[in-house]
Length: 342
Ligand code: FES
Image 1 (tube, helix red, strand yellow):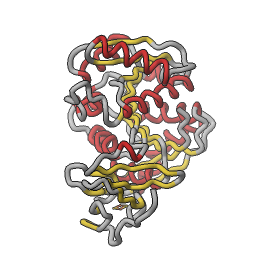
Image 2 (cartoon, rainbow, N blue to C red):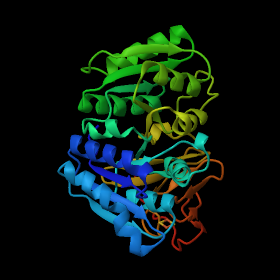
Image 3 (cartoon, rainbow, N blue to C red):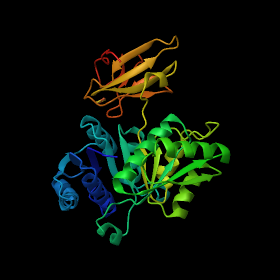
């Protein structure tokens, strides 16, 4: 996967160091156009010092990062910068919640939920591993259930593996016969041209089975979609990305798999479509009529997201909320979303 604009979120702590190394090596491997180092500070006099190590790490990879200093709330700042600068990847450290409520742990959870792009959660690594200076991933796990959203995540994972020269382990959790068909189809269609993947069909709770397999097989990155992986009965829709991102023993890439075609948006649902350079917020009403609005929040330009439980367009940056027809429900935005064409 060729990431062109990468946001590295760092708090300058020892714990964020692994994420800084991974972001720099990935930016170099992807020939990224921009690496943005985002730091939210509490004390302005210490802000620059907090990002120096990240700048030096990027410099050692031949990169010239841009530093963005903010004084708001870390998760919101990271999401906003990624959105406004149209980043395609956010990299940040994540200790996982099992160790308690560390600040970056909860930031990682919020960013994973609201990011407008892929999110790479980097676990802390031993120093020797970081100092090797090579490509951070050599064995990548792609989990799929054969759904269109899982296919998109698998496509991104395959592309990343190909770029990094990493091996791929394809995983399905569920009935063996179904799994065989889905994995073979995924390898043949999405993995066409890539080295043959190892295939694993597992049983049990999908998130736990995926994490156990990663630990057992010594895999260093798990790729999951930010939704999907529903299983045959759709029982685990929300739990897999959440559980894996919080508890996996290795790094996790949460691939954003937004709706990509109008036909995927059912009656009473909304979704974001990318049309050229623009993102369109599309709502299909109960009669099947499509309503298209600019997805740019009228406050400061972040991309709104469909909130299925409230049936509103919500802005992840500062909390504005709009009705399906684009009218302001909550500020700070004062103007409605602009009507547009699909
Ligand atoms: S950009 Fe501020 S609420 Fe949307």
